[in-house]
Length: 255
Length: 255
Image (cartoon, rainbow over all chains, first blue to last red; front, top):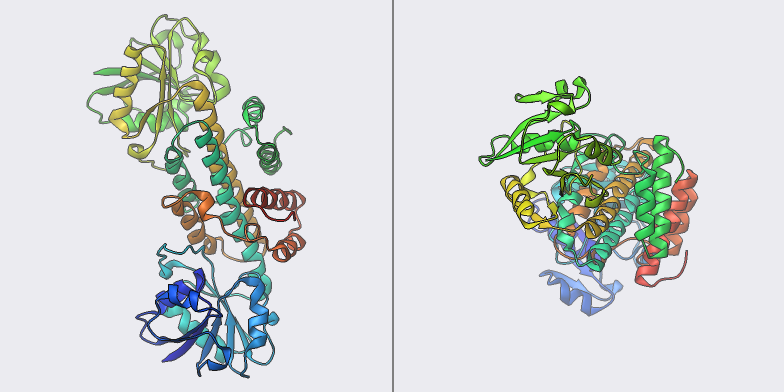
């Protein structure tokens, strides 16, 4: 049995704790958070603490706190030479404090509170400084997901960057679509089948092969009409730049 | 029985013809295309022609050709006072030639050849100049979809603009994700669960409520690191502008 302590009670932490519940070879033995509030909202039935000096013995400590707090939490730990991993896409493994054995356990997914995620399909990107620790992380990973990858900090950084494009930026484009429909008293739901189909299409072929739209077919007339009816300046800029990126990719005239 | 002639053999035309196959109250009685080639690829078992003067009598003529060819095809028709509709998001109904009764039958979806779409969920945006014609279009629409909307040209233009953001531009961001993974010898498939979850999340709440990522949480450190490793100029520009759009929306510092 691999004993785990989870530090943090945010989206990633709470989803991880849920995912490990019921696993046969892994047990979350304790949850730490700096405030009681986070712990209360978690409803974790096991041991919990708000004091780092009360952390109990475990095979792996998972720091699942905001990216910019990872380094400080790892430095504040009071023990040495134990396996301490973080769950961040953008923090290098070596940013963890050197007094413990370092590792990364990065689930490549977007987590929201109150939304169940199915860990089994979530890619887990693992990294460790030695094979024994990597094996521990792999065993942990395989109990909750069938998509376990060994990925070093350099590649993980690139992956996180790609994730910002295909998730965070994509969601903002959904938001612009939402704004346009709301402003024109149209139901946003009318766009949902299109949004889903666009996401599903890439199962079949590369995004480049699936590109459609005015910019792809170099339909300058339509693009100009769209720019005329866009009245939010930054949305105009985005329209122009994204169209330009598409025409550059597929070789068309400049808008 | 409503008799339909379809003009065109592209993605929209071929999917419409397929969808009407087996409908009980609607029949595609003829397909026109300017070249034999398109007709051959279609494998339509009914009547077909490459000559506009051979078009047979029908209750509705659906012009499903590229947006910039709609007007010309509608002008080239040799009959008068029949119901002629187009399937384009960006062409106004009144751009159709005035010698026939005008209408729009716009399926809000992204179509690719060789990919089956399930019309039943596709929003159909309908418009006509009189109630009788609108009823014909509604009857046609309801035989293939449960999401039939009456939407005028002004609102359809806005909807098409929104669709460009949530489909065409989104797909280009997928493409950038694909480029980043390929360049770093990572499998693109590692991003697919994230892409799907991002698209599915909006079922639950507005995109704004679901926004995550460095720009949302004003994590300037991570954004700077991302800009450093982006080496394609227009991708850098896109990263900056999209991050700026997000911080503007949620109130953060400028990158």
